[in-house]
Length: 276
Ligand code: NDP
Image (tube, rainbow, N blue to C red; front, side, top):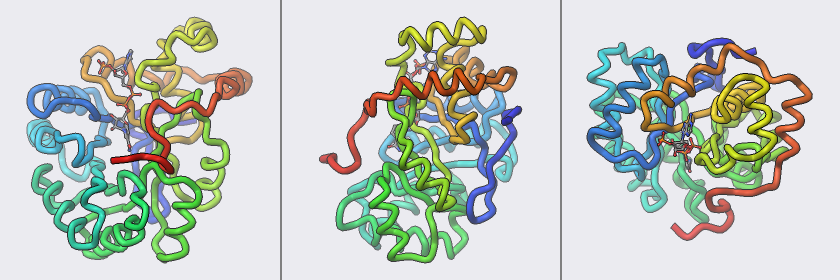
């Protein structure tokens, strides 16, 4: 049982990653991101998930600096955007992210989406940066099994992480099993389904039973599935609330009931069919 905020999973290259992190998608560059990330760091989150595409890396960097926390206590993820998925462009994009964040190294660098015809080449660029010691772990996001198989076929370096949309309406049984079998850590994006499933009657009933909010229930459900999770909030009391998930345990039966809500329903695009 994952029982504290400081608990980590050991990735396939030996690097430790916190199970619970903090997402910053759709946060404005400037005060919103700076204050939210600073609050998260004060509350005890040590893992922050940003991306070049979010346009707020500079503010994440400012908050890190303002926190005064030692660099080695933090786990910072960012991602290479789709238009930068070419060998040279990826190296430049990485350098730009690193500068905006104001960091010497990045803990986890992800391919944001599998751009057809380009993600293998992008992976080679990530390997290069990893071998130079500028990134502690490299991984992917929004990869289906066939995308992962392509990487396995063309490289000896396995992705440490696959970050994909995951919540009770989108269970990804097959992909999660595949990732587990190949030591690719599964990580949930939109773990709260962006707030869209809080009124599901089973979730409402169960959150009453455990005396926890729907958001806390969903975060706990991720952790009990051994899924790394990164809920986002710009609301100070919710940033605190989302970290209070270590004082209860969902029973095996209730985990199965939550699993049974699966509809294979996405809030975001399908990685086999996106146009950006
Ligand atoms: P989440 O599923 O984390 O939901 C965020 C929404 O839920 C916000 O509207 C937030 O509101 C609300 N919320 C948060 N906590 C609570 C609470 N306790 N009670 C009620 N409402 C709450 O959505 P995201 O899409 O942001 O996903 C999380 C992270 O995953 C992102 O921030 C990003 O880092 C990553 N991500 C990665 C993607 C990828 O392609 N790799 C794609 C999408 C996300 P408020 O902020 O107003 O409090």
